[in-house]
Image (cartoon, rainbow, N blue to C red; front, side, top):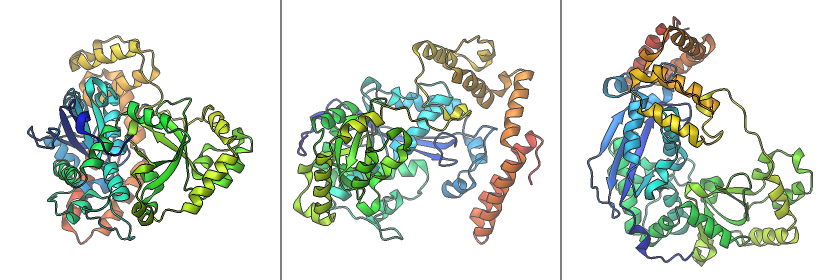
Amino acid sequence: MNYITKNNHLKNLSTFLFYDYETFGTDTALDKAAQFACIRTDINLNIIDDPQCFYCFPPDDYLPDPSSILITEITPQRTKEYGTNEYNFSRKIYNILKKPNTCIIGYNNINFDDEITRNLFYRNFFEPYEWSWKNGNSRWDLLNILRACYALRPSGIQWPKNNLGLTSFKLSDLTKANGIIHTHAHDAASDVYATIEIARLIKNKKNKLFNFFFQYRKKNNIYSFLNSEKLNPIVYVSSFFGSIRHNFSCILPIILHEKNPNIFISIDLLSEHIEELISLFKKKLLNTSIKNFFNLGIVLVYLNRCPILSTMKIMRKKDFERLNFDYNLYNKNISLIKKNNFIFQKIKILFSYKHNAEQTENVDLKIYDSFFSSYDKNLIKIVRNTKPLNLKNLNLNFRDARLNELFFRYRARNFLYTLNEVEKKIWFDHCIKIFNKNSLKEYMIKIKRLLHEHALDQKKIKLINDLLDYVISISKKFNKKLI
């Protein structure tokens, strides 16, 4: 895995698709998208298509996070006027993303926008994953590349500081510091243009690094690298290590996760807790919470999330000095691990156990429970291709229990008129549970707090009052009075 690399890997790529969502909240499974924007470029980052931007209005069983309205300035009323329901919104996005030989890219998209996309498609009977890998497609995240630039090759780019004196990776801060026009931060279209300009900045200033990490964005390439470097120290740049550590560390790749082939288990060689970790492995593993191991130096590298990895050769003497690299800790940890190599087998055993996540009854939170079978995928396709008026006539025998509730919610949220009277009563009862006395009371407390905080800002007061009007109109549908 040489740092100096040619551009051959770009030849099979047709286009980059830069994209961004604005949302009604920060929970990628439960909160809803308000706006989508995208721009397609060629491999040299020249815009080759007209930008696309459209809105989505929220369903009746959901209330937007009031704080999000103040950030995006997008109200439910605006999405109702200019947007569409979630199914039509999803269909438009799906048709854009599935174009072959596209690298789908954003800013923090791996952790946020891509998760919004997956959950959006999951709820609306589109395949949640294939858009990012099938037919020559891939994904990449510019935020991770910027972190790599800062940690490994910072010259030529201006790095703004936040209130804590740490480097800020906020898109609006970086564009301002580097003289990039970014007129409307938190407008999806404006953020997409800004992201393209940041990509151009990196490609111009750090072309070798840009091409190097682009080449190693795909899961198979990353696995091959990690497998070849097993038990050899390598560089890993990730937000996991935090801004104080420059999002940087050296890790020791150990083994592929037995239950999840997208995860490579590693050890943080700059952790101050390796002795505690070794002591913990001497105890009975079943008696210890898995979280304790992560706090002490176990690191999971997700092969399908475009991790930033390299051999130690990428590090120059001045990089070690600039990053305040602790050679003593690094060498001490390597020595400890060598003397206690029994932990490798213990790590394998630990991750062979099934560590149960919190269980939930809410089907909207169950996307990662399992993949749908081929049989159910065929039924999903039937649902997607059926005209709304004919949905009520479908007699589907789903094998996956999630799909029955998903299908009901899909109809109720997007095509309420397709429900019969019994089904409408079930939906009505579901919404009443959402708009219960306690939840409405908590919601109103949030709104009143924001009204008080922004009492002198007429623009924000209007946004909050617009949201309040929307909440009142929704609650009236279910005969609920605001507290």
